Length: 229
Image 1 (cartoon, rainbow, N blue to C red):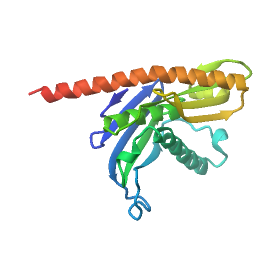
Image 2 (cartoon, one colour):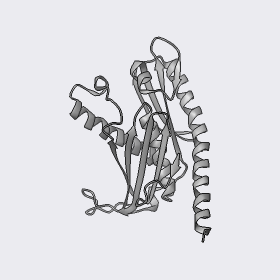
Image 3 (cartoon, rainbow, N blue to C red):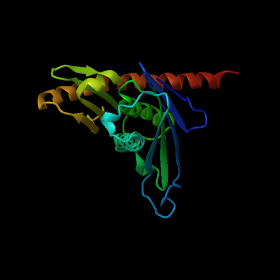
Image 4 (cartoon, helix red, strand yellow):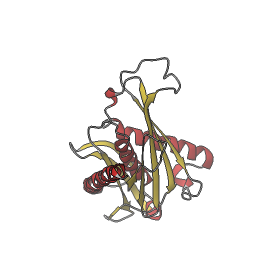
């Protein structure tokens, strides 16, 4: 994990977990120039997210997202972006930035599983790097439920996801244990689903500490650079 990776953005971050690599950039708060943004008064900022995948990021499993690869890929990316924004919405203090937009741009450089959770975590770091006020950081984790077993696989790879009976991603605001996003595909028993979400919560708590360390280290490094002659 690192921050300040995009020089011209208000805040940015890079996150790498095995073969999954994500970069996020934050622009704003700034005037909302998207459709309708100039015509209406917003008492709070609008949080918007766009997602782009590098052509070499990963082979898509079109069986999971539909038969028309191009149409399905575009729809899947729009839903992906909506999920990222939804996960972060309740944590960002949008009321502090009336009439503004906060724009998140996510680039998935490599996807070997868990890209949604990685993107949420990367955006959280980027928002903090931009100095956007938040109630707390949102951390996310994903698990795969192995078919015909009671095994929960933490941080599954793309291959493990493709073989799983179900995949679950949870975003958590650790300070008050608020689940801000729950996304599950596939089928599993209630008992196994609960076990999966408990695993996600445990990972989120661990990630929260690591992300705090990353932000503190980044701040100390910047102050050190400012003191250099």
